[in-house]
Figure 1 (spheres, rainbow, N blue to C red):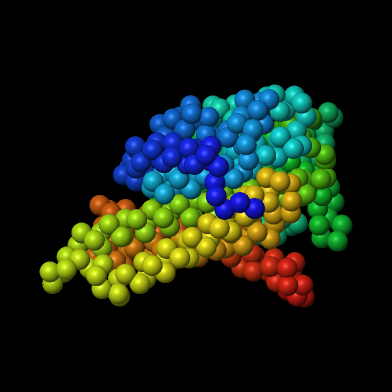
Figure 2: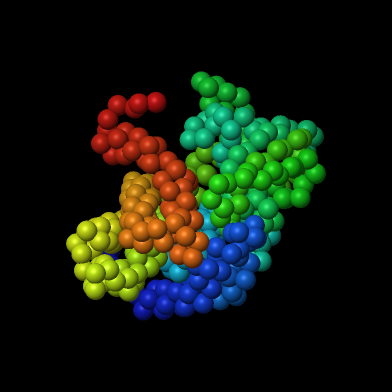
Length: 383
């Protein structure tokens, strides 16, 4: 594994950084306050081909990998513009469709997802089934040549902006308490689908929804991949999601550290910049060390995934490390700013909310520790 990015990767990083800084944190926060999506930013990075950087070339994408998509995600977050939808539409949905979709499904969805003209949300979590995907109650049953989908999904990001939703549903019995799962592509305006906004205390530009499916009729062409094989198909998309989640957290941490370092150089007390004092400097130095370590693990996870190797361990470790590093980095930045850290002018509290969320989602730190305990350390299963 090379720790030196190629010239093309460096140029991608530079170009995305320039676009992200052109919009900046103020633009993103204003969009969040308005309850609006950062469409202008999305459209600009889409126009440059950055959203579809990991989509196969034959479908209009860049033909590169999750590593390059992670660069896009990290640099936008480092500019103060974290786009959560990047974790879902190109990382999960496009990856799964490219691997398991029929030729017709690939032709229908991948070019639009690659260009950014189409967006797709991902719906797996339910009110009574968070981390335990085996207990999902949303179900699809056959009726003639169609499927009827019913159930509830919870905390679904960007469902209001999506053209379609990739839904995980039970299509079989519950032998040994485990239902057979399948994936369906559902039009976001399908009859019988209702979306309800979940109000968050710290708003973000990517909103969360509860989805209600009431006998939503789906053609057989909406089934993605093989019936009953949804769980292994999902995990093809979940490792990229965790890698992108780590990249998002790393970018947020870098943004906070940069802002706090600038403030510590400019803010003077008793005649010297506050950064002169080790009580301010050392926490920032620790935060920088932690995020750089998290970035290394994120690079490793993306490198493994792009080469078809098992990336589960590295992806989970990257997500864990990045979530912890980002939360500490933003908290440290707030502390460095003192009372100003709580003001709207500096925008750190909203960034803290996003960083703190990344310790919970897309997979909680506790479930990552369970995974590492069981699958890496070979300890007895605890659940």
